[in-house]
Image (tube, rainbow, N blue to C red; front, side, top):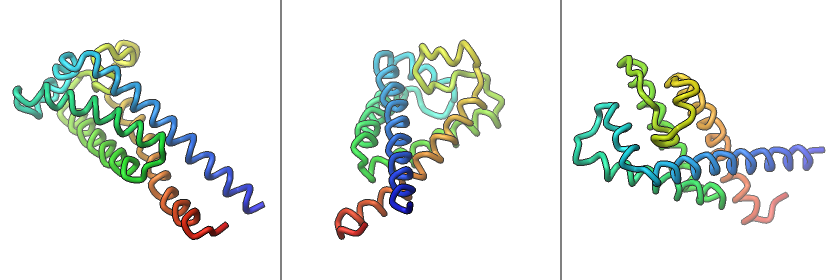
Length: 154
C-alpha cells in the first residue's frame, strides 16, 4: 500500500512538472516570435529603462524555454530557478495590482488570447500561485527521490 501511495505521489509530481514545463515552453515560444511586442508589454509596467526592454524580453523568452526543457528532464536546478522566476512574476503582478494598472500581464506574449477573454491581472496572479505550489512540490519531492536512487533505498 505504501509503495502504491509513493508511486501516485511520484506520478503526480512528474505530471505536474511536465504541465508547468509545457506552459513555460508555450509561453516562451509565443513571446520569442514577437519579443518586440513583449517588450512593449514589459514597458507598460514602467519598471525598466527603455534600452533594457528588448534584451530583457529576449532573455525572459529564452529563459522560459530553457527552464521548460529542464522541467521536462527533472533537473532540480531548473525546478528551483522556475520557483524563483514564478516568485518574481508574482511580485510584478502584485505591483501591477497595487499600482492599479489595467494592462496585459504578458504571460503568453502580445497575442495572448487570455487578455482578450478575461483581461485580468488577478487571474494571472492566481494562475502563477497555483504553478508556484506545483513547482514547490517538485522542489521538495525531487531531492528525496534523487537520494533514494543514489543510495538504492526503496
